Image (cartoon, rainbow, N blue to C red):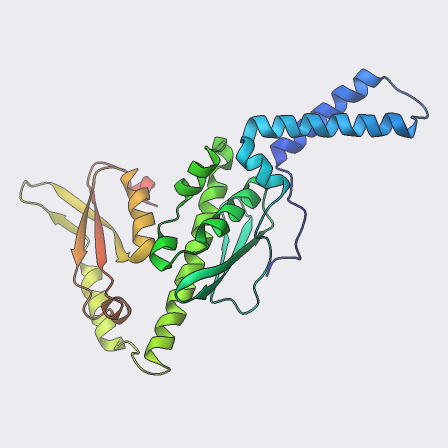
Length: 275
Ligand code: FES
């Protein structure tokens, strides 16, 4: 669990802007031995206005307003779905979901990340409200960026962190649902069969199609995870998707979910891209 709710942390770049502005304003005022408090209030107001203006210009009106008044911040006790993800930047986000009649009744988030992550977490929670699991699964980093009208390149990963955390919370809900539906001890996967299927899958790594083109398997799985991977794999080169019989993978089989392999055309990337 993260620390208690904190003030949205000002992004490092924005802090630099603030200090830069502070320096300029100090220079403009000149050095005074005993600043009057009115002068200081004016100075602080002017500084704040300039920081706000700079932030609005950099992040856009929608993000700016949400940064000033983030919505859906907080914790839900005993949530139906809970996700906690630490991004590559080292910041962590948590998302809490409460479902009613298989739709999101309440969604909240908290993060120790930057201002952009607060904005993105807030929109991830907002977008989830009222949606069923399929609807939530469609919320991606791109969806959040679209609402914001984009973010500076260095902050775009904050939207993907929010979306990934939301998907993890959804996955947690789905697992709990399956357990509830099947009851404790029932519907447990046949582990011998699952191991057998995994071993089969492990052996399938490459294929050559009818035109003699070689393909390398880069992913096997299903659900929202599959869709996220597919988007990322497309950036590596030409891909094809193969649907796989889910018999033996009980969770997928009983949930009527499909499994997929993603094949990447060989020579379209290097080993380093995949590591
Ligand atoms: Fe880490 Fe934004 S910089 S979430």
